[in-house]
Length: 466
Figure 1 (cartoon, rainbow, N blue to C red):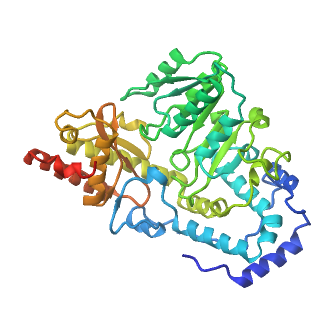
Figure 2: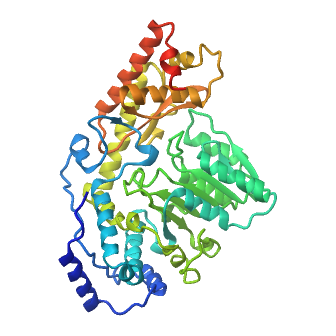
């Protein structure tokens, strides 16, 4: 972990700030709003109290980049980045430095420095995702962001929320809450796989009704991680007068985002997943026409000072994940975002095709639809084994038996899911992965299938994990 903040650099920082900054006042939310509204030409970034790390753009992806992550890749085959992400080592060290700096003089930092620093990282993130800074607010996670939007809306019995079966399960729980609390009508539409952009849009056009209160879609659904045609979906929703919220939990870092061009009414994404920020950093985008209606879940000092200000301060908490986003963005800009995305997406597709070929199975959908995650069906003999030849109805626990065996006996971290009545594995690819990781998964599954074929009592090798 990084050393504590150098005392001399902190003192120099404070003196420079005295010389160059006019007095802003305590919790100067009006100043924060002004900073977000400034043009790039007029905006002057704040100075940092310590030097941020730099990165070498010539580094190769794969093993060479593993030193920049805290993952125990000597003992684990980790191909599940999509679960909770993996933090960039230098970003976590920067977060620790921010924590130490805050504690050197907490009142000075929280009263007089925090808002301008948050405004700066807000501007940087907005630029990265193609948005006006005044349309973006930072939040701890996508769950909070989606709750913020849905709990800000004035619901009435019979209001319709339209969504697909690919919607994330915790979002479905929130929708169930709206149904039980306000009488909201939930209209869930099934997308069967394999599919195509054309089929998805045809299903939408046939089932989305004028007068629907809100449409909610995942940009890259967690269990079915195809890249949805959200640009066309937003256009279709707006053609029927339906506002749309895009759950982009897996999109930031996976795709080149341009929120201005997308024109969604609401967009949310995590920075701690594919972007590799320390845990507890996401953003909520709200189009101008809806900002007056969206309120934070926690009302605090910034309320009434402007859309952004009401989210800047929600009470005392650890702001280091937000501030360390500077280091994360430095990494991405140095390494080239397009280069990172191309490596991850290409590796995931090539690995998925290799696995399907070796196992004699298939991908959940067409390879071109996947980003840095892909889903491959497992040999049917495994499901037959864990369900005792079909004596037990297949359910989530049977998938978990196979996943646990991979975890405990092969040190492979990868999810196994029951989708459309078959076992599938969802692989992830990031810059620290390489094809040998997926070869180990391939060999492990082949060993398991061989054991099933050769051992009439193979069920006992799985049931311990049920």
